[in-house]
Image (cartoon, rainbow, N blue to C red; front, top):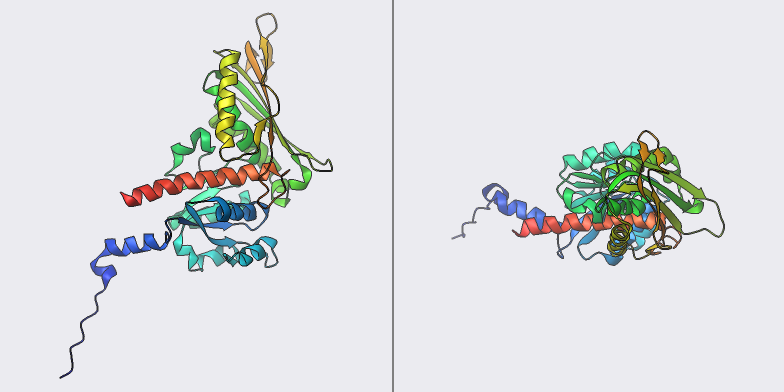
Length: 341
């Protein structure tokens, strides 16, 4: 007599929570969350190398480009990372798409809106390295913990990542009436994407000085330095503040530099913080603000890249990818804790 075949059970239908848990575990494998990177240029490729070499909580799923001959895509293939040269459409069609929890966008402000819409709709967290600023501005050691549940976060700009922490350092001990930054980068480190977004760079950085840095008014200037051999990234920060003294500002700045240095080892002060006082007998006039009496603080920074993929002088790109990585790791840690609860 033939044995009766036992009926197959449809586990997803009978146990939806178990099925959902299976999907979540598929993206974890070795306890790390999978990520996708859109953009196979310098920034996207450097970010990929950082994830592969340094992250204990993130795992590369796929690198996305639009140029079949891209050096970044070629390197990804050699490293065993899945790739597509069909942009966001190619990513959506890949099996790796379902496993990715976090998506980095290292393309352009113009392309970001479409990328963000697709990713957020699918429940992915979007980390925006363009000046599009659809989501809140994030500087990891300033407000990184405030937006861990946001569907889209914006990394401001390279100049913003280098200088806004200093404005914030002054803001936490004083009232900052005005903040101005000058970001000087090697011309050779500024690719087509950077050059195409110069206007957005200055506008986004100025808004970040105000919204994240805490200045009542902000201004940003970028300089592409054509010097050869290429020079390291330099950042100069000026603040006009009141309500504290020089000692408190210097201590706060030193503490912030140490915090940023934990994820950007080449971040450092070039010299001691400089101060100048303005009193009733010599007030300074701030455009659109009026006369100011208080302390002018000048901070001079240098950012040396880690040279994971890009040369050491490209600190402007290194601090952007390092900040994005730190932000993603914070978000991943929160997601893992929620899933374990």
